[in-house]
Length: 282
Image (cartoon, rainbow, N blue to C red; front, side, top):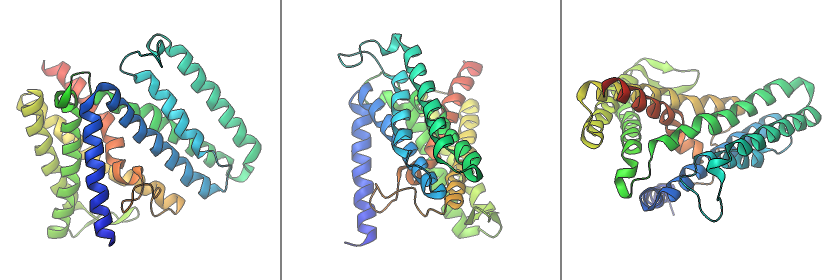
């Protein structure tokens, strides 16, 4: 089976599983977002483990982020009957676990690499755990597609920014955007992608969220610009660690951070933008 066939089949399967989880129920939405964040944290930690030849603490990163996601559980059930009223316990566990994690680094990592190892690991936990949890604010408890309209606006803006940047870069690209990070990205591609992504997100914000055009265009511009930065963000880490892909858990595509890097970076910005602009223009 060719690599292209594998990529297509994996993409179709991801789309089917993702849309099913997002539209079935609020808990399934929570589970999907939690899985993306936890796997991303594991990949982040895994690349750092290889870079620094440090103790294998990457699984801890995934578990820590997954547990922190309990703060966003969309209701109580027989398994988690009191989490919504016990957020102090979740934060307490998170803080204690981080202290143990840090002590493990003090004990196992050489002094010459301790500072960058510790900083990068704690940054990864904050990025995938605290920052990434902004994705939960792009979904709500409404059934079916209406419960993910904000996420659809953000994701479409991100995806069309990426597609537009690729097409514009191929057609008009001459000046390199950030050659030290990505040799193929161009200024012309970024401008074209930003324009297409802005318009896409704005049109969907008007159609799905009943926004007026001024806040919709501002939201779209914020999504498009942050998507461009987010696409470069994981490239910096991969160059730093020497990794081609964040992992190989998605056949033909690499890892979660390879496929959802812009979403993880831009999603929380989109959630904040929707809240802020909604308040200003309401």
